Image 1 (cartoon, rainbow, N blue to C red):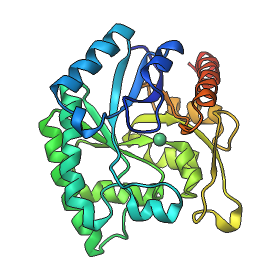
Image 2: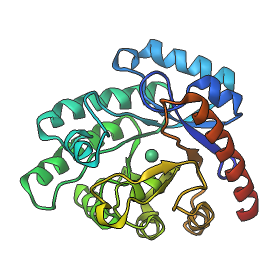
Image 3: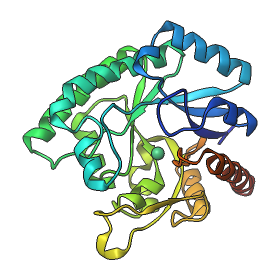
Image 4: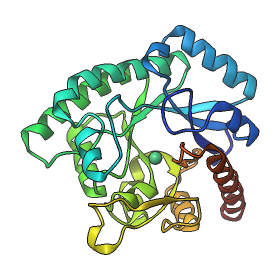
Length: 281
Ligand code: MG
């Protein structure tokens, strides 16, 4: 794979990603694939994906998944519902996530990823249990020959590093999403990237503007088309280059309610990234 191939977040059925026809139309060679629904995480589902993606010349570089019952309607509701953090659902979701790892193995993808949720305060009982559940999941993922990438944004760079160190497994890395740091109000994305950069193995190209100062961290910032927000795409890419990152530049535009605009915005993002790439590399 050449350095910094363009990518896009796509969905087979569930999730906010674009569908395969749009990826093809935009000529994008790599995707972060939102895993298909549970009933399709099997050999038939994998065969279906492999046939279609190979015919289109598209490679899945990471398989993502969320869980039923998650909502991102507010930061508070996200904290309550997302990932492996909600205690009542933790074991069930960790078990369910194994099907994502199995599906990724069937399609030959060595990386799986997720939003783990708002990691609790260090040394709480909830935190200690989350460490154990995550370790067990990582061992399963490793047995499938895979690494697991945590999506950034729901905690500060320092807390994420603390958590990863406490989990203490050699197949745990980071999918860096600069816009999430802004959306959740968890810190300057470029400073955060410099702190966690040694663990960043995949990235999202997404942009956002900060919520007003007084409500930052309690109310959402706003996701905007790439290049129109507060991330600073050129600085972002230059920082990635300094860190030696050479993987895909995977665009996310999370407006699945407006598919036409989503496609148009992603098309513009491809142009922007292609221009910046030729300037920077
Ligand atoms: Mg993301």
